[in-house]
Length: 331
Image (cartoon, rainbow, N blue to C red):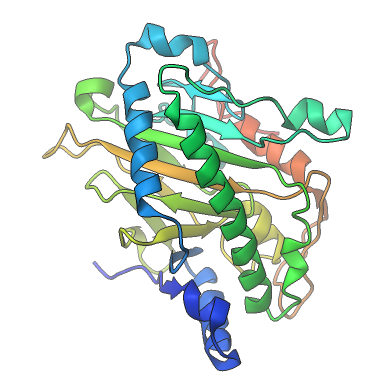
């Protein structure tokens, strides 16, 4: 199997290098995002021990009995615990799939907005399990790191397009974000996969950039390219996996591909494999007008959209109907 065209970018030369080094990095980024929509990023400065400690604390919660977790149950896009059967990411593509084989702790924007209408839809206090009190401090430190990294990445992406460095980052004065800790237990917890069932079904993300801290596994991340179809994503324990979301792909006039991906179910030869991912979903300030950059940079001129009207429709599309309906639901 050929490797997907997903390069590793070291941010250190970008942040401190000479103009020639920065130009070479920008070219590499632009070329990669036109194919798979993914990058690996090192030199980010995020402490690996912080990520390990979050995983240990989250696992202590996930392995509690269901009745201990149920008080934290939330809806997709909310704050709290998403139990088995809450999401089916394949729905966002209009595909009938069984629910995803995972549990999640999900958190979001931690500061309220001054506009009461925006606040009502996009802000609520995060819900931190009292059973693992250390999780809040760890995650809040991590989310501070993610906010800074997101801004650096968006500035890099602006320059990679040959536009102003703040073409995206200037829309980050009070952004929303999502943060999921996804637990992928083995069949001993979730049961055997149904036909066509994944840990996360095929989909693209919805926002600007996703920053993923993942673990390698046989039931791990795969990415889609037109050239190679589904391929195992490259893995570097020191790197974050970065992918472009639908909103940013639309913003670039489809110059950059929204990275289509899936997470495989537990493998038949290692059915008890357990993985955990930390997933930061970057967005932008509510009410941002997203308009495709013009040709020759952009390739498709989409109708302008309100960023968060768009995001709400996408979040609604992946929610499994609690009445048991299996039809994909979108706008």
